[in-house]
Image (tube, rainbow, N blue to C red; front, top):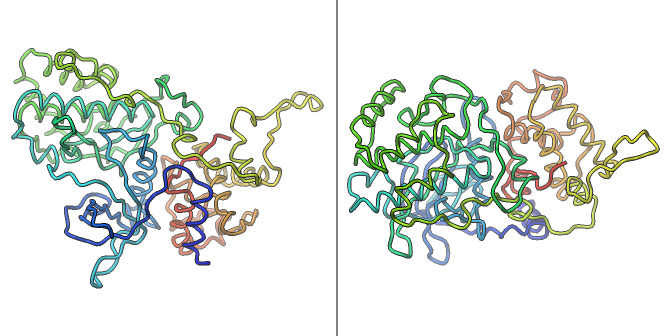
Length: 470
């Protein structure tokens, strides 16, 4: 049985998250290019048309091995918003391709590609000057804020909201609908919110300020705290939304190649606005101090939307539960038991014979592996607690395909740890220098990792979030 076939069998047997078609696609024409790849129109064997985003093999200087970070982020996050978990204002990922091959010997496109719907109306940027009436503009604003509210409810920060990343769609009721795309820069501020705290209802307060690289986004849409290279979080998305709505109201895009010029353009634009409900909402979104900026949930309740009787979609304020969005089928083996070690009935219990010291019910061999993983992460000074937890889950998934050697120099185990680090850590270690930076990685083969990374990602059903909390 080939590796691809074994992976396919594994996914079908162990995942019930809404199977991906994993179809064959044929190229039609190019649509455009972005930071992490290009987009083409394609059709499948049934003649259905899609947009296919092909991710570049390599990312930025810190991400020069294997799949780009942008692809890992976008596929992982959008994997959650499929089927019954879809939100009408967030683009739906239809399918994933690995190594999409172009027609007639044109070579291979991105290492991975994502199929999604085609939006013939194009982007907000394309149509900014041609909206028929005020209600259409208000509907676009409401849809965009609905998408952002749903993301923020789940601790996801988009980090690249701009008019070009808002596509337009004709809804069934005849209204114009905004659809937020391009999640290559998106991150989970609090991954555990999805993994452990999901209730299916409104979320509790999520940490809203973290330190991220200030090089994200487009100058016109970057929030003041991002420009100042300060800690930033969910409110920075609302500044970007405010800029988009300012453009929408004024009927033209603001163009600035430098941050200071952008702030001046925005200030000038605000000074021209009248005292009215829609302009007043924009002013509240474009407060320079993030703590004064209105949140998405509150913005949806603004008077301008009440006037038109807009109501939030039923999923807008629902926090996703990854165990429901992408559940693992019941599996009697130790791997499934380990993954469930963080669930309520399997959490550590008191052992009275040892002074009430808590011990985990995790399988002993996997507990030993988890300890080794944490030791390696600690030795590399990797900070996120999610890195070790995710690496354990990855190794469990890989053990379904091949044996994972529980030793410090195991290539398979180190590959799982490196991939988890790549996805969860705020500050990345240069993978090209990893073997020189630590004795732990002296025997680690970076080329073999590059070959194995995509396989691990496929084994995880294209979602790098752990299904349970340990």
